[in-house]
Image 1 (cartoon, rainbow, N blue to C red):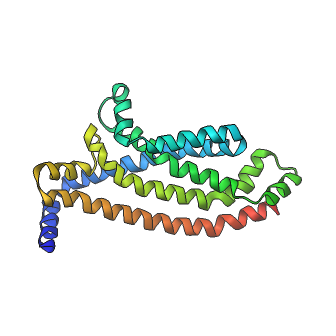
Image 2: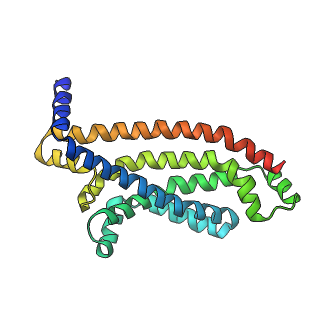
Length: 223
């Protein structure tokens, strides 16, 4: 029974291969572009949070609130401004992707040993130099772990882009549910699951290499 369903899904995918590559490309674009937007916002906010206690409280609260708001709710809020399609879906995914990156950025920067930071300051480093040469290099593995978590979550969340015409594999998954077509549903769901696993494995490998190379440099910079 299960094997037969999987065979049907494979046949459906092969029969509709051009459409599949189109949907997969849209899905990847949604995930990767929203991640870049989230990283571009989360990193500066994380730095600001470590420099000012009041800013830390406000930024952390906003990050937590952003994570609790459903992606579809964010899409509904931006719909009157951006309309339907790729852009509102991108905004919703970026907001949802913020918290893991922001949380890990703050945690990574604050986890640097105070003695190491003071030693760097004793060498005459400015706040920016301490951030660049000491805090950030040692925090990179932790920050990267947040990015990895965010990417994997976003692969699944990107299916919701279907509801506002954003494309992606959700077109097949939701369409399969509406049409009671298990083959179409699985042809969209299984590649998404494999994509999440592949991205997680690839980013885990990069994360291990980053952890092996960046941390010694950061310690050396302060020494």
